[in-house]
Amino acid sequence: MSIKIDSGNFVSDNQKRCGFVAVLGETNAGKSTLVNKLVGQKVSIVSRKVQTTLSRILGIAISGNSQIILIDTPGFVSDHKSSSRGESADRASVLEKTAWDAFRETDDILFVVDVHKKDFEKSIALLQKIDESKKISLVLNKVDLIIKEKLLEIASEFSKIRDFENIFMISSLNGDGVKDIEKYLAKIVPEGEWLFPEDEVTDSSFEKFTSEITREHLYHRIHQEIPYRCRVVTENYRNESDGSVRIAQNIFVKSNAHKMILLGHKGSKIRAVGSASRRELSELLGREVHLFLNVVVEKR
Ligand SMILES: Nc1nc2c(ncn2[C@@H]2O[C@H](COP(=O)(O)OP(=O)(O)OP(=O)(O)O)[C@@H](O)[C@H]2O)c(=O)[nH]1
Ligand SMILES: [Mg+2]
Image 1 (cartoon, protein in one colour):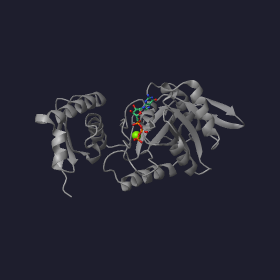
Image 2 (cartoon, protein in one colour):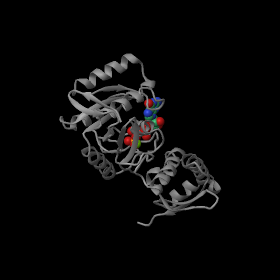
Image 3 (tube, helix red, strand yellow):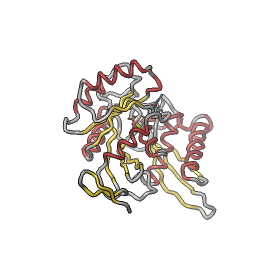
Image 4 (cartoon, helix red, strand yellow):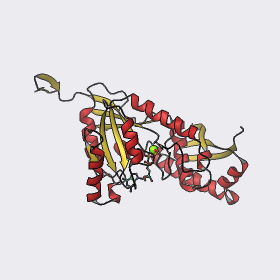
């Protein structure tokens, strides 16, 4: 181990660092996409719909000697109304509470803004709610969708609101600028032992992770109809002797009508969801997956 002298203190070259960073922002800003990019693999599901992330999800990134524990949070819909049918204000506030709770666990925050949005009123209102004592970096995301001049205007608009540790201009989708965030976070997390084993990328259980993948495919395939009424639960899984894994999941819906929509003509829709989810699970788990989906009408 080599030791170097830095500002009068002895600092080990391979001193481990570890810290928590909350990722906050409006719904659909691209928080989960960014977390996945930083981790280097999917830990949090992504969709075009609002309020995709439903609970706090940890994504664990490693950069050099630093372990960066990213807290992906449900996005904020500040007016407490969702664009989807039948969404209640209650659900929005539960999600928002989850996000605030996550944020209290940490000092460093990435505040993600979708620069492609028409106006930033909601983002600004949210930003103003965050304690002045918190360190925040502004992440202007989706730069692939707008011209540079507009981007600089947005940066200056946000800079009037508060001081940021850093302003990043990135595209989480294609990865532009994400490395700069990684380098920055690796430097600012405090010295300390890693809290998770080196090969761990999330604290999600196998059951939670695999059901989230199916939920994502439901979101993608069943657009307007029912997704918010669906809950996916991995009931059980079994490692088979040939190296494959057998996963059984229940999809809970609120009514028989929803069940029919989900099944589709002669079960075509659910089969499409199942095979897309199975393919992705096989890829993510690196082995063959047998996936069994069962649609259940949830009793009140
Ligand atoms: N063009 C473009 N699209 C992006 C970028 N980042 C994310 N997206 C898209 O934006 C949508 C929302 O992304 P998510 O990562 O689910 O957003 P989120 O902030 O986690 O959303 P919630 O979980 O609902 O709060 C998805 O369709 C992403 O593919 C980007 O840099 N460029
Ligand atoms: Mg999300």
